[in-house]
Length: 383
Ligand code: FEO
Image 1 (cartoon, protein in one colour):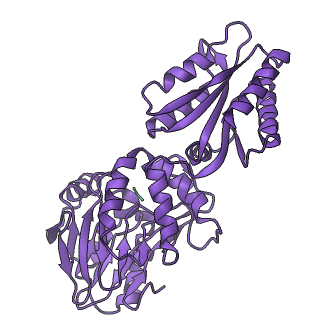
Image 2 (cartoon, helix red, strand yellow):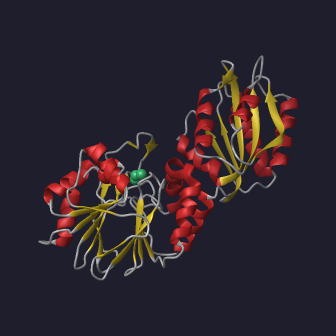
Image 3 (cartoon, helix red, strand yellow):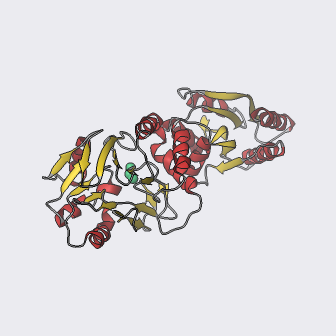
């Protein structure tokens, strides 16, 4: 696949993987992207996951023929992009590895790879391949500290490392880029909004016409859409109007309350209500919904003097990912001593700019007139 006349796609699709990074479901597989820039000198942009090393080397050879790559540019040392470096250097030992100092340390630790021919680069450094003039952009914590991105001034291409990536292999068609890109972003990079904002500001000085990420499709149309979404996500802004409701239910009574609230919200004109049963859903989907909408309702039971485990895990995920700038409504259920609302509230103590609704719904085992009236009041307040 040609990206431009001189930039070729040489990545691979992984359909064997069940959980990306040990936790994210990837029903549609995963792509590990890599690119070749053909010029007086040849640069290969990143390697791929180790199980696909042979296929990747074959893809490179199909593009470069008898030539030898001059550079392997390692933008990110995480194993999904670096575990084939060894195979690359066995094939082309004279190639120079170009990367940040931290990345060299990481690939030594991870794979005992210690390239003899190496070029250390940092933010602002450049590398000429002939016609292609590459500028490196430091992008710490997007997604690891060693990350660099690369801008090619000739073809106005940004190689964006993990940024602008998504779950899903490239041989599976998906209409909605944002759905899996959002789940990927909030799961993997979401905590580092400040760092993403810093990089977006650095990138603003480049005339980017094409984005080549390390996962997901190459983006070359309507780039403002993707950049705007990244700006919203990384600034913890509200992407869509609506309410996310995330719940756990032991006997079905909390779920009944959630469904009643959903009905009430829709009846009162809420444009979207996204409901997740935390015991059964892919929790990463619930996390992305919590960040997508400006309002979140959490409903759970008091359990062993604490809250139900799935809810605890969920709130921990939110706070770990720097959840902020949101309104939260609480529904608690308890048969003899409801504590859940207080505990849930306490878990957001260190989160920035969280507003709790005045109405908290307290259910004593099952809905009654009083708790139903509270639900109606909560719906009204949320809207
Ligand atoms: Fe795609 Fe952070 O690795």
